[in-house]
Structure formats: C-alpha cells, structure tokens
Image 1 (spheres, one colour):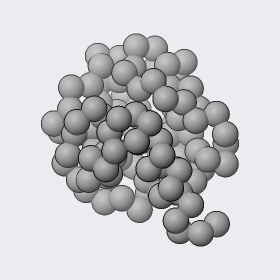
Image 2 (cartoon, rainbow, N blue to C red):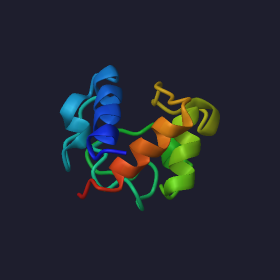
Image 3 (cartoon, rainbow, N blue to C red):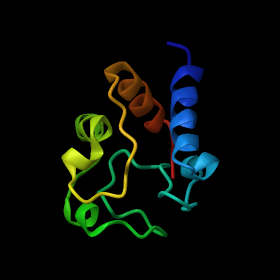
Image 4 (tube, rainbow, N blue to C red):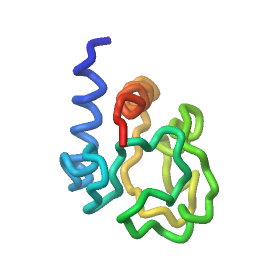
Amino acid sequence: MSAAKPSLILRRMTNAAGGGESLLSPGVSKIGPSLAGIVGSKSGAAPGYNFSPALKGANITWDEQTLDKFLENPSADVHGTKMVISVPNAEHRQDIIAYLKTLKP
C-alpha cells in the first residue's frame, strides 16, 4: 500500500463529511473534531468540539479495534452519535486507521 492511499481515502471521507482539511489539523474543530491524535484518546474528549452525549458517555479508548468497529457503522456502535458516515469496506477502514495513527496532536 502506498503512503498516499490512506490519506486519499481519509481526505475523501472528511470532504464528504464537510470537514475537509480541518479534521486533519491539530486542534481545529469545525463540522467534526480534529482527528489528529485520535488514536489512544478517549471518545468525546477532544477539546473544542461539542460531542453528542452518547459519544461522551461511551467511554471508548480509540485503538485499531474500536475505530474499526465504529467506522464500520457509527450509529450502531454508539447510538446517538453525530457521526453519519460509515465505511463498510474493511480494507478502507484499515487504511484510514493506519493513516490516523500517523496524525499527531
């Protein structure tokens, strides 16, 4: 897999969500929270974003397994989340997670 592949998939996903580059920028929250530093963090804890009560209360630590489950079907994983875009393709989810692991806060 090329280094550009996960970046391209995640950029398409963030643009579809209307968040564009802000989702990839540390500390910048617009339509969604910044995804920089998401791996290893707690759900609903990123500063500067108004998370749903459901995600705040989910008490998830984002790692490969929890991100994979959430990305596959966010509303089934955390009923009441604001996240509306799912990634049904397992390979795409793994590419996104690999890329997220490179984003530092």
